[in-house]
Image 1 (spheres, rainbow, N blue to C red):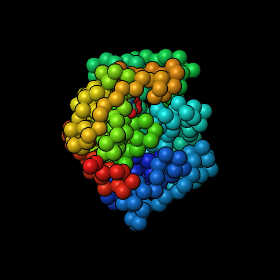
Image 2: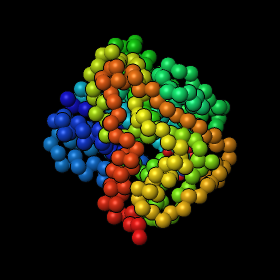
Image 3: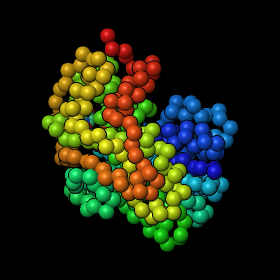
Image 4: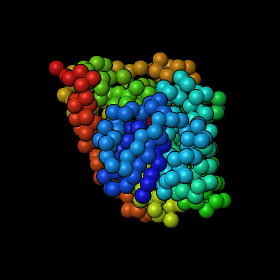
Length: 327
Ligand code: UDP
């Protein structure tokens, strides 16, 4: 298979590049390096069948040129991270909304099966126990940046779904629930790499809000191999599929866990949301996935627990020179 991965120099995209190359496929990564990095591609950059193209998904000509040559498209390019969304709302909206339309239109025009990455953000404030794919979305005003992101990703799903349905070109939508692992950066807000970097530097760990909000972190190593499999599973076509882990933790509990596993001297500090993200920010209190659809479709079962996930990130960060080592 010859795959185009948009956002292939990013966190999830680069792991997918590794995986597809290891399986003997050809990969073209299209990435504008806005949040991704060539360092993430160091494993594959010299592999036969690998090609990196620097460019934006807003560039229709470029997107069409490469998708026309492909057998599969994995669309992972997006403006990600809460800081990014809050700081650059217009650019985020353009990339997440128009960029997806460009990629999906190209995939349909050239009749190439495509996967569109979505997020558990689409459920908004719905904190049900075990969110199922068809559950209701609960949002605040779209004028608030966080909800504008959720609304844009919801529209991405709609674009992917309707184009797929009307054209008959295979299409799968994947909803990632707090997927974490080595190479994810804390620069744009993601809590796990932020806490680990803070702990490794023996700096205060910044818990936003009360820390009682809960998340369920999924391993990138559990999630990535499912993506090409879903795209080959006809029962998955035109569906949105939840992917994530099963071990739920409060954010305060996560901070404690990170301190313990790094052996850090960091203290835990509490920061209010306004200080962290600016005025009017709303957090989700809980997000727990029901992954039984992925289990039914391809036998998906997350195998890595939270300690294993955190340990693998610590190991990766310790091997990265830029991170100070704990005393
Ligand atoms: N968070 C935190 N400290 C940080 C960064 C994030 O306490 O330095 C919190 C954040 O407010 C949220 C949770 O951790 O409640 C997960 O945040 P992230 O941005 O990783 O994911 P999302 O909010 O999209 O689930």
